[in-house]
Image (cartoon, rainbow over all chains, first blue to last red; front, side, top):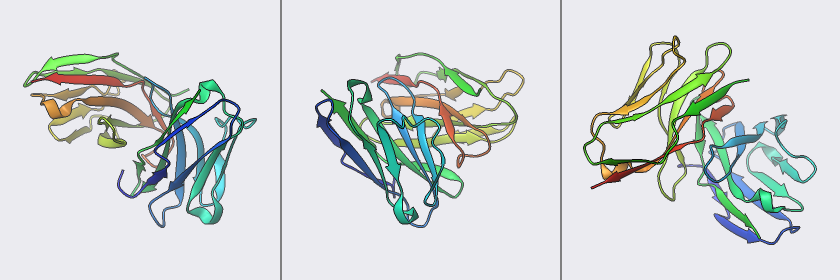
Length: 111
Length: 113
């Protein structure tokens, strides 16, 4: 967890509203992941970045989800519009010394 | 495709009991195998890993051996403590932890004093 910062930690919104999550990974490390963890499940990959490039976004629901990683450091994941089924924890991970380190996640509740 | 199946929880044990959490996998090639732990209110942490057949990963008294013949990576600990209460995830990746990780559904462990 150390070194991967995510905000906000918690977010409650009504359905159809937009929401954004921010991740600041360990400085200088090129590979960044976004995962979604549904209640009672393991995390599932949404998107992988190598520097600024999304190299695997096959699991990202592109009709409502988008992500960016400008300058290859911070990353933002956006949902617009949110649906009830998007309630989950959104995790960011960065690679350091060939190991993934996870942030604490953002818990999203869609009402 | 690759997948991980792990023992369903919750698992409740008394302190100092022996712990086993079963995990089996399906994968092509030679995946790396991991156990992650998620303590209440905290993020995922790597507990241990093994990168090739017959390797044993160990950390904090936990152990798991990469068994290619049975496609298993069971987590064990000889004497659990209350502080071990957490959710444990078995996982695999195609090459290393830097690669995409596929997680099992998690096993919640509760230890009674």
